[in-house]
Length: 360
Image 1 (spheres, rainbow, N blue to C red):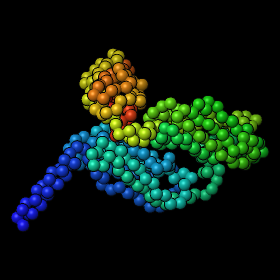
Image 2: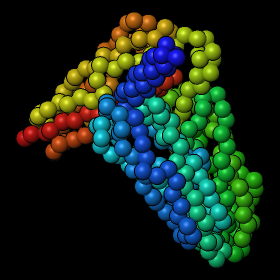
Image 3: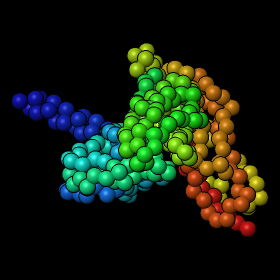
């Protein structure tokens, strides 16, 4: 009896130790994971905020947040969140052209040990407005009206083909409109259901996005132009955004994976003058068993650039990534973000925070 009791206590202690070990590192906890908008009108975007806390003991980084459809747009706290501190996920839902009930999912990806992915949801009901060409097709280019001029494809897995449509309308009372397109990117195919659009007629523009032909990784923005010609020509710009993500299924099945380890997640140039480029470095080490490939180095601002001395890092080896900040014409303190995209399935995107205080 005593022997059995001792054994049970030992197992409880071991289990307790394992639980503590699992809790080490960053972790994420949301105040709520469902937001109900209730009943809203069909007159634009409605927004809500999901607040989260880092309940771990290391800085928490939100790597990305994706929505189940293009009508829902998430944004999030970009800087690392210290243990015990809070961050926010802002979610906007576009009610335009979407009457009726809705229930959408947002997936949050982070470096949390226990919750690397976390699902949030929004729901509600949209009251339709009166139908009119102006409300149904709110974007106008002369006599040509469109339902939207922006297509957000969100995550597009490389190897897939994604299709989206745009309804268009000829507001003329007596003129047929010839529909055509120009400056279409090579990785898109654009067509229209009726290129000779009669007065008062509606047609559908179809955009096929061929991910492999984009030859890119991460966030990408493209555009093309639509033309509606009558006696005069109406032209408008269509913007297409996508986040191109790698398919890791074959790499995972091999059993040997690359593992990216960064020497730091943020860099500070301190006080620097507005006198030209300043540089610093971070070290990227492959702690895995397969080659680590750097897919893309990018920044959202032209003042910040990245360059690596290697495109492929063998297991146990490292690469040096040079970060250059051009401070010319900068007036005050800055906080920029750079991204490193690799073939590490556990952390394909690493966001680097760059700070500097510009002095004159």
